[in-house]
Amino acid sequence: MDTYTHGHADSVLQSHRWRTAENSAAYLLPSLRPGLDLLDVGCGPGTITVDLAARVAPGRVVGLDVSPDPLPEARAAAERAGVEVAFEVGDVYALAAEDDSFDVVHAHQVLQHLTDPGAALREMARVCRPGGVIAVRDVDYGAFVTYPADDGLDRWRELYFAVHRRNGAEPEAGRRLVAWAHAAGFRDVVATASSWCYASSAEREWWGNSWAGRATSSAFAEQAVAYGLATSADLEEIAAAWLRWRDADDGWLGMLHGEVLIRI
Image (cartoon, rainbow, N blue to C red):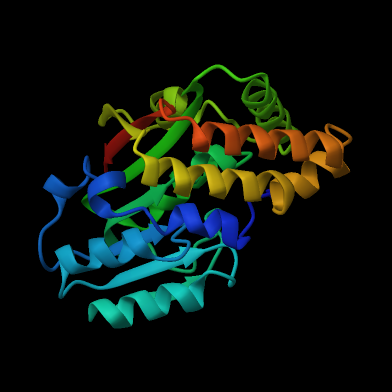
């Protein structure tokens, strides 16, 4: 079974709650229209799912996550937004849906955590109708940039890579999406890229606090210690580095993402 590097601690969900269709799935939006049936794989707390559901209503929307932990929050978000979404626990390698069940299959920040992204893409294609689209977006931590320079943040990235790869996953997923799609047998692939940038004091407060929390109290922290890659003292130093970045008046962070639209 795959290991989710981040886990579902509140410090993790804090960052996931910021995500919307506009800031995390803009490349997909031109392909949407009312009446399409959509599956969102790896829905987490459902903020993107709910936005997508509003765009395809009255189409059927299912949000799927490997863990039940974030789903009550996702259901509450859908209720507040007044959209119909079925949130379920599921396995991307063995989807419960029948063949040709959805017009759109979406996965945001999912393939980077999988040991076999090609198998996941093929399973997503199985439930996608002919003429439909698979939409995948993943960050590339090799193109993750922070300012000002800080040895603690350099150590964080080294440790993040080590934990992620110890889990058999790929932190540089963004640059590999096209290759994974081709290896899975798909040739009608359109690739794009987009970025997140956090630089305002509010953005630094939010992201810096999130990662300071993750560095010491999350699945990532537990795995780093369990794998013998870091000590609790190391993690405290990394958390302090994130707080220094948060408090730097000229603090800046950029994250590049790869995106693919796969036509079925």
